[in-house]
Length: 257
Image (cartoon, rainbow, N blue to C red; front, side, top):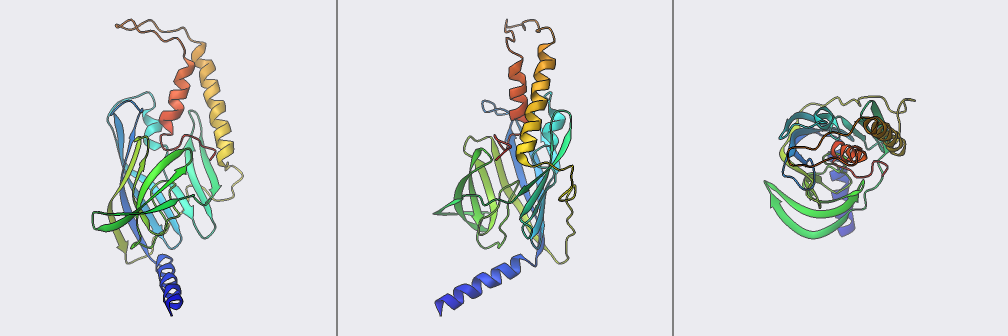
């Protein structure tokens, strides 16, 4: 009898998850560098219908002006499309000079779910932890919201992810609003699955590295700038491209994973 009840509960939860539509609004904050409090604050929406979702930026505010302002505004949270039925994910990404559509499979994330629980807003949540694309995240998910999704490229837990924080404190994503809709949402990826112009994550990582090497060559060909008012001088322009790479992709340390 207990097995029957458990099976029925799982069946009902799956049926509900595959039939409802809604929007989850997240506050996403990324620190520009590990040793600073300056950050970018975005309002992002996770729009979901049946077994599809799209995570996109709807508003962004910068606490500091940088050389990479435009890229920082759009990279990482612009139109990430997940199709759980086809087990595929599509994410627009940008290098310094080009835009790409990165297509990957939805690989299982090795979550370690703990017994720790706490209330976040109106939701009772449970904690989990995993390394995702080179950075470790601590998250809280709500089992009462039967959606195996979350902000950015986080997914695969038995409930919607309500809060996610990287252990190095550079990335924080917190659910602010959640609402179901009485009508279906039409979700379309930014570019079609299977397009010959799409690349996968390892290919994108290679292209990004190539772009950064070209950036190094261009910068190193220029005369070194004069020392500033404090007498500080730049001894290596190669460092700039490394900082560029980290700042443009604050969510993930390794694009190939």
